[in-house]
Length: 145
Image 1: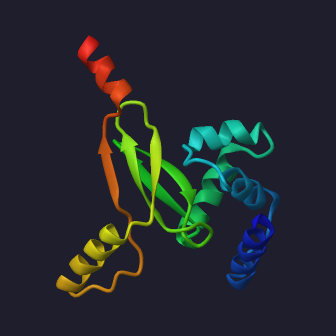
Image 2 (image 1 turned 180 degrees about the vertical axis):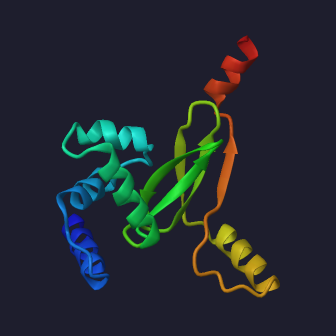
Image 3 (image 1 turned 60 degrees about the vertical axis):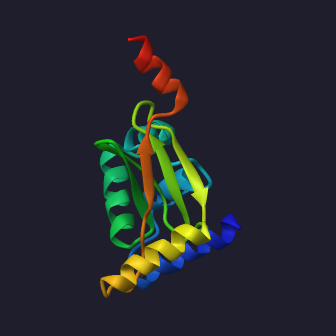
């Protein structure tokens, strides 16, 4: 499956007259089949193979191409590959520890989202549904303070 995803990445880059660089390949590999990550986590995982600027530029490009998406956690965000490479899903995140849990496609949520889009005359091409709150561990920590 990764081979197919990599081939798709290469096709998308070529279709947009973009080169397949080491930085672009590495960032894709770091995001592939992993939990959503912060930019800092990506930089640490790159272990000096590419610099911070290259990571930021690659992520910016991937966002413009619709290849990655941001998951908002409080006032911060994490990144993951978009539905171009993964099965559509939603998220629940903890505002305390930043943990993000994926919710696989849910027909009730999808029907609700498309219903709202129809009601307001919008075609739902893409969407994100996120729930933010505190996990049990973080709630216990707050009560202890």
